[in-house]
Image (tube, rainbow, N blue to C red; front, side, top):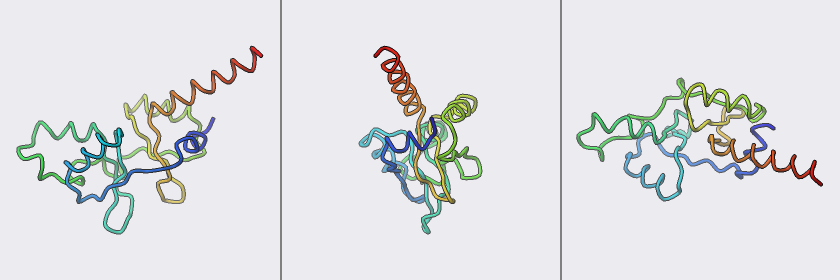
Length: 139
């Protein structure tokens, strides 16, 4: 099974935010949409990073005025992000996400983010695949 198979199920929607957005607004979106990450763009719509729940939590200990923080101040920068291709298999994604202890993996094609998969997406896909195989052998 490939990452693109998971992206088809998810319908390929990617939440994005501008790097200069206030973190409070992004956290509101996380809660409202029940998501744990969003891709970060600069003013020219270039992918520059990812903001995750973990990024937000890390900044709490040093912050005096949380509402003044911008996404670019706490996001994981592009050069530090592990990125997947739609043609990577999910075993690779699962392995790298487990090894690096990350929950969200941006998927890129031709320099553009085409989706994001979570560890939950992988578990769900594996479970559905296992159920399909079991039904095939039991029928």
